[in-house]
Length: 482
Image (cartoon, rainbow, N blue to C red; front, top):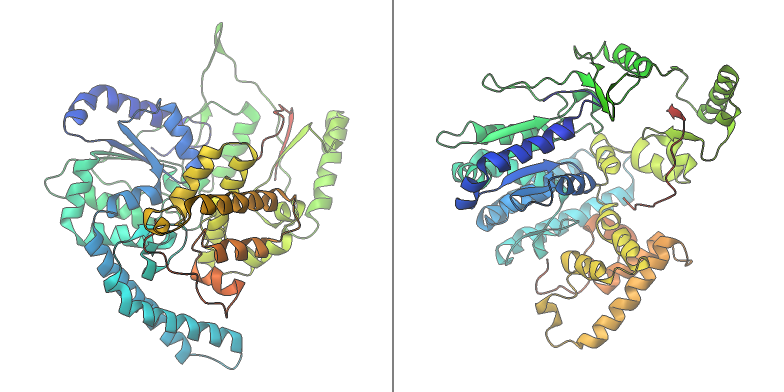
């Protein structure tokens, strides 16, 4: 299903899931099979899960969690892949060292040397790792696979192991992919490979819009196989007539999809589509953005005889596309520039979707723990600690004073909450050092090395395993999309 904004793709997805449950539910239950629905973010997964009534027949998760669910039982294959992956990283660093130019800084050479030595040590210790798990950052010796590892590992297993393809289809005979335009081409090709596997029956569905792709790693348009059904949804149920005309004019040079107004049902039957209004301003993308925004608001105020366009509070909703202007407004312009403007393309994508290694500890653990603690949801705090931290695992507690550890853990969670909320003077660097030194989190080696390049790693454990804020809801009449 390729359809534009406001067409009801997610509604169709939910209806599709409900139909599969109604038509095939009993058969799936008897065969101990489920329906998989994978999407890009945990927030979207939570919304879909609620929309299907939290039905256990449907497995809703992010792409990465779904990939790991499939791969987790194949520990022998994972071990072989990890060993190969380490060898590839070693070869890449050795090639880099062989091409050093005169401009390469000494600190870069030193870091590469440390990384190379670490990888060589890891290569000799992989055979002794008891098992592998998926967490926030990679640490192969401790059996930890990171975000990027999962997206490489599972397509490899699908491509190289026919048994893996068969088991995937038998466990999940229906796989629906939401926001398919942001799914990597490797994952899409891997799923299509399962669908083509002889002797398996897999209903594979993609729901998305290539023109709404956010991340450069996304595939954009999913090429349909000859035997697939194309489900058109040309209607737009969201936009007024003039907004829709503007959207169609912008899109006309991108693909052949033109939307039409969809019928809206009200208490008294079909409601007419409002005419609305829309103005498009094309201005330089330079450091005059803020000044130009004020000019636009002044123009709109004069054009509509509505001075509220100049009101900076409550009355105007600014829809800001991710770029440096938004970061500057929120006070982290320099950080944004360092992680995005001056970073390699692969890192930029991870920065934008929250999967880059410096961000994962915050997105996955520190911010959710702080929010849950400050809201008094201690059960959620404990769930996050058990999921992401080794400190309460059975092997880690052997011989330990459990009461004392819980007391220390309580103090540590409180300090994290204070630091994240800004009620303490702790810097982000100080918070990360404290978390790393306590062993609460095993950070990605790259992040740990930046915190203190000379510090030894924390004691090895026997085993291991977007902050959201709310504000008063408002329904402004005036919108600017930047």
